[in-house]
Image 1: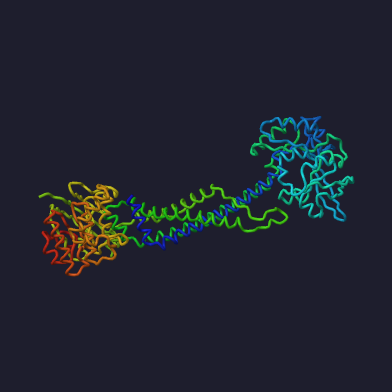
Image 2 (image 1 turned 90 degrees about the horizontal axis):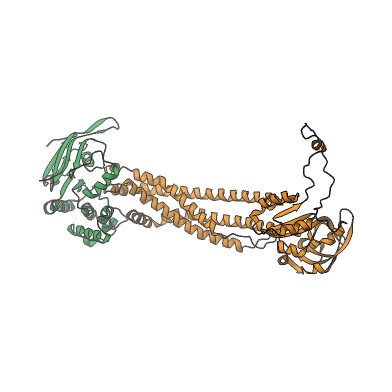
Length: 414
Length: 224
């Protein structure tokens, strides 16, 4: 193509200027890739962490839920005003929890359903007293849901089955109490019940909010601590094969079993908001960078066209139409945009690779040694589309101006 | 003799700084193979007339016909295509594209025309450069050539599509007397040997005196 040849010659005859224009785009795209990789890496990492520690659906008895007042029950047609209604005095117990759980397991979309009960407790070890919680679980079923086996730092999962007073403790909690596998800790419930338990394992989810407070014990142990009967279960945790089915399925379960069923999106609304805010930030900064690069291209192309007025006049005199001239300059900006973006992708990849190598201490909050970086190709495709379209827009205006140049004014006005 | 260019009552006005008639009822016809020079004082309208004849200026009244095609009222894109095929240009300041070699400069209008393959165009470009004695400079960057050489390359470029008319705006205006002679001889040779029609605007009385026909203009009208 002739216009392409001319554009190529123009670009190659001023390599420095071409390079500077390209660097603008490269910088913009490179930063975009680096930022988006880090941000989405963090998002995915926290989401994954949260997903490994929270169930897709949690069924529990929501005793704080609004209920009909007696007046409304008796006189549904009338105007009723009930102020300051007290919650009904009922326990958080799920009736027939084990039957519900085995019924849920028959659903082909469900990966596993684990009934459990949990209580607030104080952990005592010598003079140290820490607030936390204890969950009574069927440890094998829990392992199926959260892959607990992979998170055991010391001790064995199976030991809990053979130890009626056993306890698998969060790593942060164990460190604060300064205890190891084999040690005994005394726990106290808010009701004042005290019991001595032996630590058979230590787990680490990687999330401070869990590792610092939570312990697992057998269902019967926790029922003992809470002084409840053998059928006392407060919640059923469910994992699905496809996480995104949680919302509709939760609504269905709520209808069938009459208990509150909460899906993970509702439970982690704060985290999801954080993701949205981070995405908005990433894209707004990147778009700003690209607009700056776009202005750079606009300026350079304007200057080039000003310097090439005579050439444009000559091309038009010898039979090149306005379209051809516009094409010549549009091609130049597209080539700058494309090569600049391509280089930007490489720079971005390099930057994100360096970031992924840099040591980073997550502290108490999350246990990581390096920043999580996402190398998904999606953002590289977005990057190149971004880069090329910005330069196309920035190049179009000067190119159109070049096409409109009147050759006579230049040829005569020397 | 065949008439290749004909105008009928061409009027043109300038509106800046105030309305002013530059061309007054120009009637002109040019025969094939004629070497015509347009002369006159500065501001008499000879350059303006040439740009109207060249189809680049479309803001006029009257009729323009080249090679039996009426060009008045055609669209810019059609005119560009027509110029490419039928009109060759030679300017006072050479106006080669500085990034390209002499050969590429000559080839460009032919590549635009797209009638021949690239190899054929290159062969034809060499042929034209040979007529002008420039074939041994073909691969030099055009900015490295001297003024006279550049003008000869520009003439080769004007010839590449075998145009109906070659138009020159002071084709020797920027050359020393030796190169003026060389360029003039080449133009003359083109009309004699190839039957090329040439219209040249000039200040140079000696140049004009040696052409086939002198058209003198004054205040926007043709005197003779």
